[in-house]
Length: 70
Image 1 (cartoon, rainbow, N blue to C red):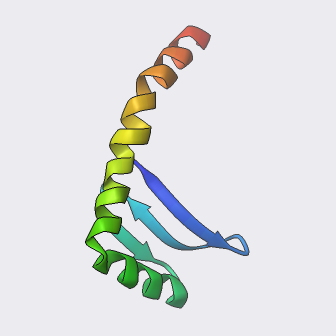
Image 2: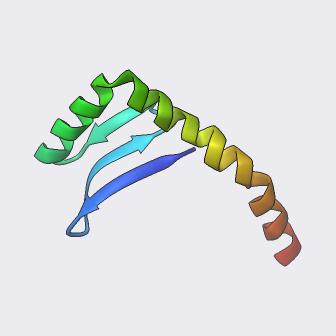
């Protein structure tokens, strides 16, 4: 799962989760940002692609490193 969270003053205000497939806002400002970003199809496609680009590319490396250290 790919998660990108946005914080201000240690308070999470918006999060993108690949399992949900869209942005979710946790504050008034975060809800406005989430609504704006969710309307942009190219933004959602780019964030969904991050799971394949970042997570799936590195998971085997991380998995192998954990197995050799345990």
